[in-house]
Length: 97
Image (cartoon, rainbow, N blue to C red):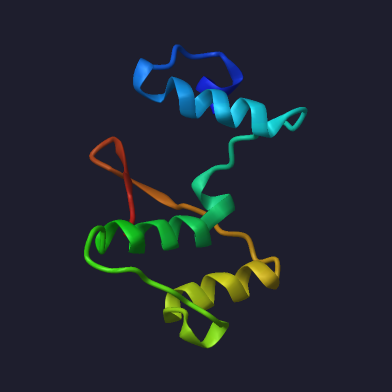
C-alpha cells in the first residue's frame, strides 16, 4: 500500500508491477485493513502458503471449505467481530494461539 501510494521507495524488482497497479486503480483509494478485519482472507492465504508448490486448491462451494473457514464466514455474515486478544507474559505482550 505504501509503495503504491508513493510513500515508500519501491525496489526496482517490483517497479513495473507497482506501476501497473497504480494505472489499474485509477482514482480508487487503497486502505489498509488489519488482519482481524479480513480474517477469512488471512486464513485462506495461510492455507495457500502451507501447500505452496504442491498442488492447486479449489473450493467450488461453501460445503467444500475447511470447517474453520466456514466458521469465520458465518461469523462475518452474522456481523460478529473478530478480535485478536493478547495476554501479558513477563511484562511483554504475547499473542495467544
